[in-house]
Length: 162
Image (cartoon, rainbow, N blue to C red; front, side):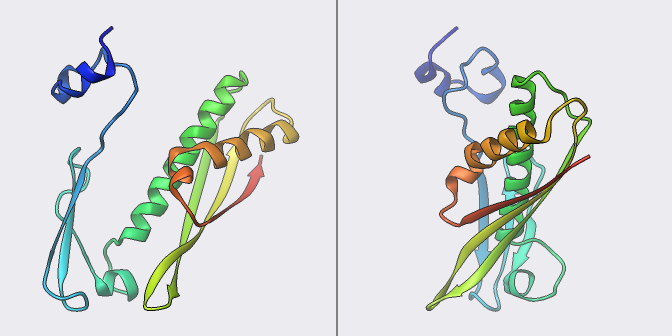
């Protein structure tokens, strides 16, 4: 196996033998116009988002479309849920289903805005696990998923185990 420095120089399709030391996941945002009247588009390298529009009215109003906070919420829900799946796997348990909603709060902060909270709500079906052990693993996933580590905001977790 080659080292991380050599892997960084390789094009994406040839990285299969690389250690998971550092993975880049680029996305771009292009904005045209003023803050209130302008419009932008977000694109990810994977192509999952391809020039997806966003704007002031999509962010602060009722217009359909995406916004940065919605994308952060999706990233947090996905990251936490996958981290919990790995926690459960390490404990020798396989979930039937883990369904997480993340709700990100954007609040006025002086002249600008701040993301103040990410509220995770989990519905889990995990046969053969005790509630206390499940909560321990869920709390570990909450604290240790990479997106959680990115936040300065409060993170809460409300969970239900079926």
